[in-house]
Length: 378
Ligand code: PMP
Ligand code: GLN
Image 1 (cartoon, rainbow, N blue to C red):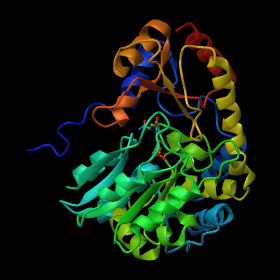
Image 2 (image 1 turned 90 degrees about the vertical axis):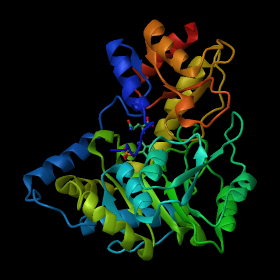
Image 3 (image 1 turned 45 degrees about the vertical axis):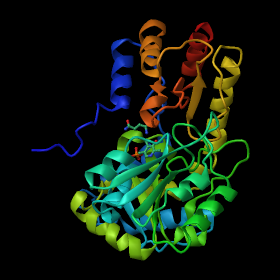
C-alpha cells in the first residue's frame, strides 16, 4: 500500500518528552501543567462516577454540557450558539479539528495554514487529499501579512485555519486583524477553522478575539476549544466545536463515525464545574504571573525574547549563544543542561531563522525557579 502520510516523523512532543524522561531533565517541552487540577473538579468527577452515566452519551454531547458551553460563549464573546444544533462535544480539540477538516476538505482543495503552525493541521489536510498552502508569519513578532494571505486565495481555496492565541509564538490576534480576515473572506465560500484552545490564556489586559465575535466570520467558522488547556486536564482529552447549524450538521456526520460520542461521566463533571465562571475567568491572570516570574528570572540571561501575549508558551531566541540548528540545540540543552524544550523548526516553513526554542511555563513556581537557574547558566 501507499502511505497516506509518508513523510510524517515521530511527533516532536513524544520525542522531547521521552528525551526529558531518559535524561531526567526538567520537561518544559510538551505543553501540559505539572500541577494538579482543582480538587473541586475532581469532586465533580467522583460525583459523576457514582451516578449511572456509564453507557453511551448522546452523539453531540449531553444537553446540559452543551448548554453550559453555549452560556460560556455568550458570556465571553456575546455570541449565541444553539446548544443542540450548533455545539458538539469532542475528544479534545484535536478531534474537533480533525473532524472539521475531514468534513469539508475534498481531494485537491487548498487549505491556507499560517506558519509556524501547531502540528495537527497539515497531516489532517493531506490525509484528506487536500493541499496545505503555507503562509509564514513575519519576524520575531510573528505578524501575519494579510496581503500575502489574500494573494494565496484561489478558486480552489476551501478553508483557512487560524489559531489565536497562537502556539508556538503566543501571538494574540487583534480585533483589527480579525476584521481584516472577515473582510478578506466576504463574498467567498471559504470555511474557517478557528483553533482557540488557549482562549482564556491572554495577558496584559488584552482580549481574546474569538471568531464567534464577528458575525460574518462566525457564519463560516468552526471554533475549536479544549477543556484540557482551560482546566489543567490535558489527559482527559475533552473539548468541543461550535459553528452555525449548516456546518455543524456536516461536522456531526463525520463525528458520528470517528467516535460517535465522548466520555459520558466526564461530560457531567464538566457540566457541574462550568457552572461557576470563576473557574475559567481568572486563568489569564494565573498564567500571566507565571510568565512574569519566568521572564523576570531570565531577563539577564543570554536568551532574547518577545514577551508572549497569550498561551502558556514562551519562545526564547538563542542566536546570541549558538549557531547550532534548533533541534541540535534542544537536544544539547536536554542532555547537557537538563532542560527540555521544543525546537521551533517543526512548526515552521522553509528558509527562516529557526534559532528559537519553545518553553512551556505551565509549571509550579519551584519548577520555574529551577528552569531559570539553568537558563541563566547557558
Ligand atoms: N491546538 C493547539 C494550538 C494546541 O496547542 C493543542 C494542544 N493542546 C491542540 C490544538 C489540541 O488540543 P487537545 O489536547 O484538546 O486535543
Ligand atoms: N499541544 C501540546 C503542545 O503544543 C502538545 C499536544 C501533543 O502532545 N500532541 O505542546
